[in-house]
Image (cartoon, rainbow, N blue to C red):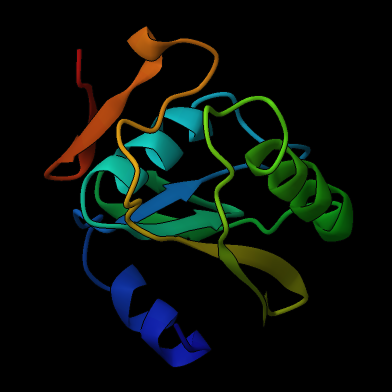
Length: 132
């Protein structure tokens, strides 16, 4: 996704393949549900440093982009998930606010879950739903 494509998405609404997370000071706990859902459904984009409220997107950026990116990627390749998840990551600068974007691909091996099988999710519209 280019910076312009991201800006275009922010003019609309959250999509089935697009989820924003505030993530100012760290990786939010709710992100793991979205990773599982994107992996189990059709793939999608996770964007850190943006908040959606009442259909309006506000860019706050993340306070320590390298730390947050490292923490997130390590969790995807560590023991949090039942399989290793390879993602594409990007950094964008919006008026000195750094936004992180991660593309989570659909997984060939399913279900993808974190911590236990009961934490397996699918994407339904713009929401993550428990699969089991």
